Image (cartoon, rainbow, N blue to C red; front, top):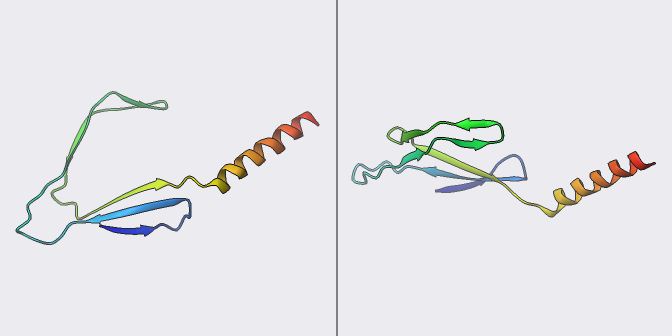
Amino acid sequence: MTSRTSSRPTTDEEVWRRRESTADKSSVYWVQPGGQIVGDQTFDAFSHSDNRLREYTTSWKNRSKNSELTVWTAIGITISGFIL
């Protein structure tokens, strides 16, 4: 596994790379149940095998206090603008 930070400072990611070894025959199977609803989308079931996958990247958003402060400041200014 290799960790690296993306170009966006609010996002971290990890990169997993498969070793080029014939002795290690591990496999990963991704199985996702159907009927999952996210927002207004419904996702069907699917499965995926990693036979040809050599690199897998996961990323997630960092929760920073600065971005929360910016959002609440913008909300406060907007509400003040409507009141005045």
